[in-house]
Image (tube, rainbow, N blue to C red):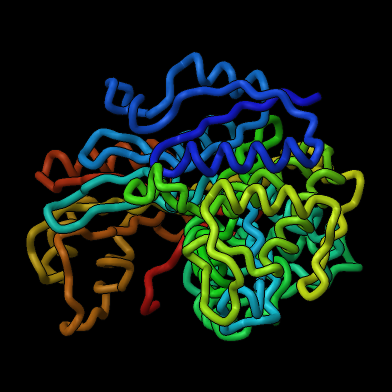
Length: 478
């Protein structure tokens, strides 16, 4: 018997959670439930995170959290509970299966059956942002080797466990050579450990276009956080409906399972909502806790119910559907089908052992790290890079000199173009004079000279080589 934490959420949440629990318990799920309150009521009671400390204690004790959709009140100050939960509990992997239910649910892609594996903790979703000048704000894109290794390995282990044949990586490393480049590099490294599984890489823009047009070309797709967030919703929608998709958020110790749709408050209390999305999350939960036979039974009963044409209003279609039912009636139909399998849709067969072989991350020996320069970012209201360069000459010395100025990543000095539009945010690169070696003391001296000459420095970024390879971006145009 496994004790799990359940939150019924807001809007349609309580109805679809009751339906979901009724189905999985009827199927023989060996679970005991601890219910907690999260969402709108908690927010409005003054808790900006939407969850009380005691509820965190329950989630951390049980390790498994089944969550219905919640409503986050509009206005400033309220934090996303989903983002908070993923980060606090280290839920690094987001898993979203997206499968066509043709011809019972309308789709242009009848052969679609893909799984999106999304990194869940870092990338731009680290949420580290700053306004630096009057005209420029910054959001830091953080990609770590541990984050890459964990999510890529999860994708390959998932493919291995569920009999998938191919894992595809989407990045934009032709532009973001350091961050997305690391993700792609780690993908190539780990792919070599799984020679039985085909692997490939696509640039995200053409890969997304290909997925939207020909999703049957893909099997498992692994991506950094932002790309995965966008494309998992696209994939769910083109498969049939976002309302039918469930999501697993997996960490080394805890896991959270949910529907990917919202709380739909205008449908609340009307016995109309489709519980399928949350049910799909619960099926993933059952596989995660080792009750794969129950998960298999529920999924096949659900597929049989869809195939029988017993549909809630959101997917009901004249000529295809046979009966329009409410939330409770849909759940009752799935329960009646427990033990049955679909005849047209593909029945599922899950491995009895569903735990994935996921070793803990092992930190590699550090590479030799050498300081090669410093980028000094300056707030300056002028528009002529040559004028700024002249102003900065005072910072040059016998050991360090200005070598380049960029604006929004484009080199504007030396040999810039007059046509290039410039904001008030300038990256000024200083490097050691030939034959000299840069130290952090030199950087301090540069900042002291800048301050004495009223140069408005807003940040600095040290430029390093790791293992003899320069590990920083150049300026476009070099």
